[in-house]
Length: 114
Length: 114
Image (cartoon, rainbow over all chains, first blue to last red; front, side, top):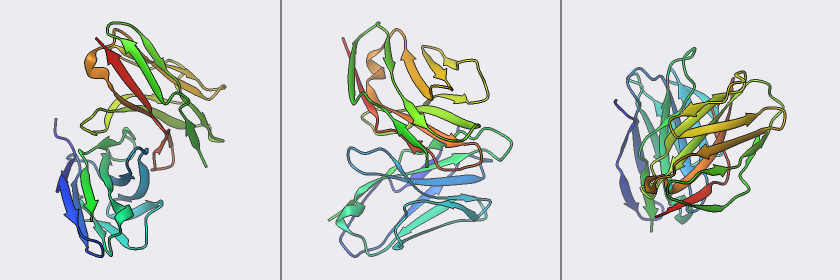
């Protein structure tokens, strides 16, 4: 079965640079979620989109923005990167409302800020 | 806000034996979902099992089963016939029925010994 696709899988950036993470949900899934997992921590919710509209917002820094496109893929844009942004970034997707609310995770993007 | 607590940072079990991981949560909601995810060394987040709060019957998935005690707000995971491949970090997670963000516990690192 098709899974959530994230790209790139690894990313190395310098401080103050920008980064764009991409997420392609499971086919026919219309909701996308972004999570950040720091070293030794549990994943923290950043933001979610349903039908291309922001549906919920968590502890996402103002330096970050995200959107969902007409083909349901999503991008997380990160600017003015800081050392503390080094983390594993997960995207997850879930099926249309009325169906399962289970979130299926992609493999993650490992971001290292130097 | 919901909180999820996993009181066992680390556990170990011998191959082929049974182990139970604990999880408690706090919520004022009546309808919600609970999940167990595993995160092996590859750091992929893999769904293990899910439980809808309105269902009294405990969920089972092959060697994995849960003991869901709604009144006690407890959701433990039992792994039978443990295998070396079960070695991973296990996260308990909570999701409101009307919400979109998963709230994770701190995780339990399970090691299966040969």
